[in-house]
Length: 432
Image (cartoon, rainbow, N blue to C red):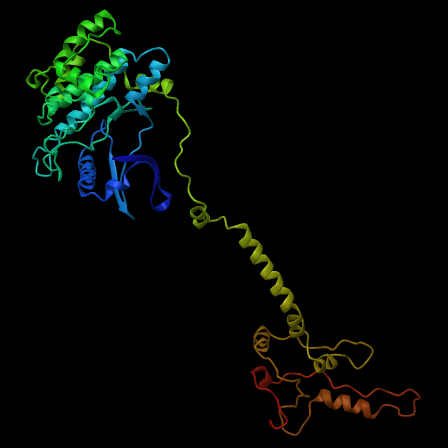
């Protein structure tokens, strides 16, 4: 009816979880009856919250795929555990088998007592209790799984007349006679599972016709692989659990578990079961699908650790920008040619004496950007030149003309910014 895959569930913030994905077969997906059975399993499984029952996480119905995401149990089934012990030339010890049986009975009791939101009992029956559906994890805990053919009052599909569901070797005799499944039929299957794990072999085996005949005759063989003392305590419980008449069996799974605990037999702890599972079923590397490369590349880098290529690109762009702006910066910092000529002293390199400016004047001069070199400044009174200009002209007129060496023309003195220039006004000949 379905195939189970190991899948990886993803969520936001990098959350990931391994799960068992049960996917309905494509040729059954189009048939409404099987699709309804599949969804019934998901709904009922999500209602059971018990540590001994495999949890149902989600339902997937997209792109023609119908699946159920369930809890992934690391370990193996009770059937795989018994096969591994048989391959090693031994069988499971009685204390380990009793612990597995008690865990399974606890999960089955939780399923039988399931109620709806209004507190009404649902009358759930598993109908497929078998060693293959008992999952024993590396944590030493046994969980009941596969609720695909459970019978409940809230199911949207029902068993058709003459239809039998379950494995033949674990069906109660009344089911083969056409009667409906009940809690008693689940307890009959529990007795068969307990017998097989203790004995280390199948109770009813052979072709279907022979197997059905053994079930109808209730041909239960005595336990031979256990100690005589254990056999004397266990066989009465097994005969009652597998009684041919349903009314002679235990009434609930909790009652059977109570009789097992009161039998006086040693029961293994969860830690001891975990050790046995790891010994017989060594852990193998998980074969879950790895995250795709596209998903990895889309993840943002951690804060505070930028990518190397981003740092290299930023440095290259900064270098190119600096080389391109260097000539413009140098040209902008150098003074114009006229100002450079004005700053050259007229005599043999004697520096000009300038008065120190006050901080307020320096702050005002920093804001002045003259558009062109200033001519010689005038005094405050109109029509009069400043004393510095007058002295320079007098010296030039009194220079001896009869010397043999030609004297260079006197250069204009360094301009002194007026009050208007300091305030941002550019001097022009038309300015009074």
